[in-house]
Image 1 (cartoon, one colour):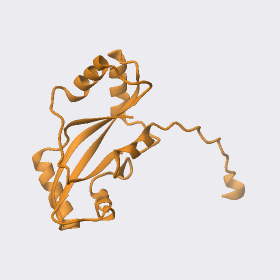
Image 2: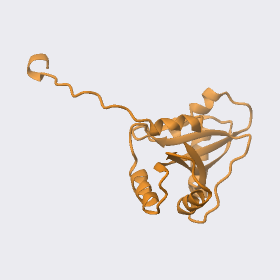
Image 3: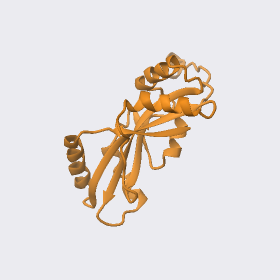
Image 4: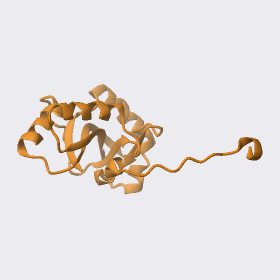
Length: 167
């Protein structure tokens, strides 16, 4: 899986609102930044030209967002086992641009949280419900865990439940 940092994901107004909500949940939160992160499932390493073309497509000449080294990061991505509508369309576009080594592209948001004092990893993860929609998204503390998005599983066999007999 290839990870590409993306542009800012939220306006300053939305970041300020989110920071207030996170401070309400944990008063140690100082600041929050949010930028897109593009996760790319490839069949082979991308050449220099393909990588450059992919960055041009995804970033639209915007500069990638940056987060401080001391910030704690949380990655919000679509639920594993699903393909987001954004991914479906972006993957079609990438394929139309003849970047053949790409199976799928998915987009998430990397939230970088800074705190006024030391904070345990569990406390950072406890802020996850403020950052995502649990029906369609999940939160990971490590971007490597997002590789689960691209895992292929065999479908379970169809099962029938006799409602009249066991209802």
